[in-house]
Length: 415
Image (cartoon, rainbow, N blue to C red; front, side, top):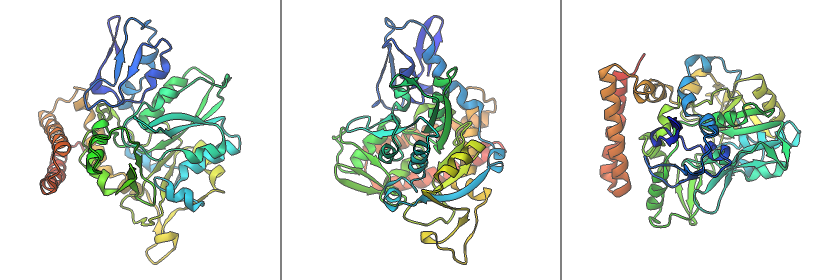
């Protein structure tokens, strides 16, 4: 997070979400990026000799706004529409993180002329392995990258003009902090943003990449590109012609290891002011191994975008059997299914309720002690997972984390 201390630009690594918007806003080369930094290392380096104190980088930073718009139960109750969906193109579906809906929506929006461009993720051959990029031709979006789990300067590529022309309407596909950064970047311009949120509970520091390398048997090869998800659902991780199943990379998420420091201030996994949300159907019986998106339509604009993609997307408001085949257990999707898929109970207590503690505003000593203990255990577990491969002990730590964290959250969580 960039801020001014008197008349000096300064950086707080403990609050940075590593979105990269500050780099896009600076036209003087005063900021440089360290995408491979660890948990509390500086993601941004400031060259004060080049800084002209224009404050654009501070204004575009989303961090100060993230705690102000927490996701509440009413946001889920008031959804326009809930459905399960997947691309009708089985190859697109198989290669996608879930069902391929994001690619198909982007394709339809460009093909129909509804937007001038799409801003999403593109793969790179070397670290940080991904970047934010504009897609202007329908066929280009089929090459968009899958979900990305380590932080990279996604918003660093933002521009006010493409090929010298103003962008009238932009389909922006990203996480909550990334979308807020994009909104700040285009604030005061004539560009209209159509926002598709990719549900995000936390992003990872580069320590997560180090963990993946070691688990795949390439501990010293930090330059080989990583691809997350795809090849069915829930997918695999691929690097150096090696593949690992989804369980391999989901453990650090369940234990909240190596999360980007600023993620603790983000309280809205739906993306504030998003028009449409895409997420995985965890825990709701949608067991199609080819991949499905759980789609949450929030606004009339989101519904309009969805209608454009219907010719390319198969969708249903029912939970059915494998392959979308109705059976005796088929039933309509409900708000309760959405809460199950996002693990609403734990999310509320680890994200929304903990924000006063991380802002230094918590006055209840029991809550402060509880959250401090959870932070200490995260740090210890992260240190151990990076240095040791003793699976028996790691399994013990995993069980301890699951039971102890739930017990503490039940005690300190606000009802």
